[in-house]
Image (cartoon, rainbow, N blue to C red; front, side, top):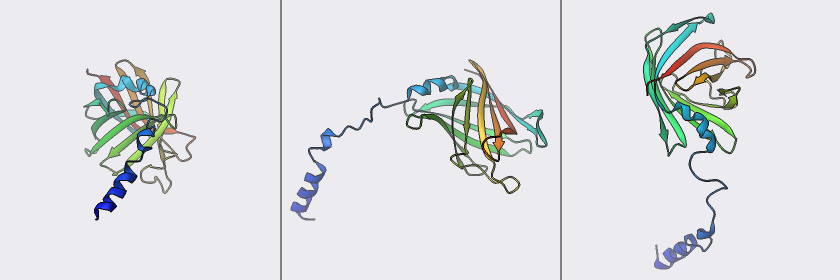
Length: 192
């Protein structure tokens, strides 16, 4: 490349407008203020996974091996992350990472689950309603394999939220409006 070509490229990238572009789109960088509603998740928890009867998911809950997880901040608290290794009743271990955030542009909470069972990056979106956080993957269409040939959307509900405990429960739906228990819930008790 000739010296004059380099000077032309340098002058194009060093435009007087470059220093005048506002890169902050009307808010302070960092965590959205709404992330404060998720601050109760921070810390270390003992998690008791429970599985329901597949024919009647709320008939009886079967606990498996308790595990420990820690919710930690990512990128200065803009996101929260946790990792679990849940043992299914058949002994299979399901590893999952969850990342929790607030989308300030769409004005909704978002949870991304990554797992080694189905190899999914499953995106859930939703809001707090009546003190519960309800997020589902209906709009993102990132649900897992079909059940009986039909797609089954999933919803995660955080309920019974207290200072030192909460329950995360999975639900399923064929249409995104009628939800039923999916037979999987995790009971969290704060360790520290």
